[in-house]
Structure formats: structure tokens, C-alpha cells
Image (tube, rainbow, N blue to C red; front, top):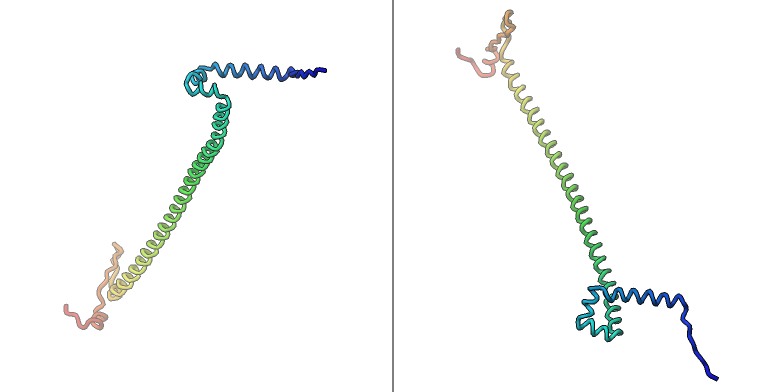
Length: 166
């Protein structure tokens, strides 16, 4: 008896093989791929398909960590930039508020000191001039002009300063 091992390929698998074959043909006849295949490296890889597969897998696997690294670097750069901008805004705001508080306190302090000086000097002058005016006495009031005529009180001056000579 003879054993016959005939394998039948399902119709779906044959259609898949045909579509992959047509896709590979379109890729192989692409002008850039054709230019690469005309080089010595392309001809060498065409003659050694396992090495071509290893180079393809290595290239594909090398892009994953490089892509992850570039993504991480980009996200880190964006986060640092945004953080720096936010930190600068916070520090400038804090400095501006501090400057505003210091200048306001300085303005209040200066106004208080000037107010105290004004009150002190005005009271001193009022006291001084009240002493000078108390030496004078009202002698008459001019009716037409409402001017008060004051004459120096000689008795108080003589008591304070001694006898005055006129």
C-alpha cells in the first residue's frame, strides 16, 4: 500500500498569499526600494534573506527605545518649560507683592513721621507766638477797617527783661 500525503491549502490562505505577494511586488518595485536594491548592500541582503530579516527586526526593535526616549525627553522638556514659567510667574508675583508691602509701609511711616513733625512744630510755634502775643494788649479797635491795634505791655516786659529804655 502506498500512502499519499496530499495537503490541501485552504482558499483563504491562498488569497492571503496572493495579496501579500502583490504588496511585496509593489514595495519591491518602488523607486526608492529599487534604488536601495541596486546597491551592493541591497544585493547582498537579497542574497541572504535571513540576515535581511535580522537587520529589519533589529531596526524595528531599535526604534522602540529610541522613540520612548525621544517621547520622554520631549515631555520632560515641555514639563520643565511650563514649570519654569509657572515658577517665574510665582516668584515675580511674590516679589511684586513684597515690594508693594514694603513701599506701602515706608509711605505710611514717612507720612506718620512728617505728620508728627508738623504737629510738633505747629504746637511749638503756637506756644512761642502765644507767649509773644501775650505781651501785647489791645488798645483800640479801628471801626472802619476792623484792624486791632496792639501795644506792648510794658509792665510784663519790665518784670521779664528788666526796665526798657525808650
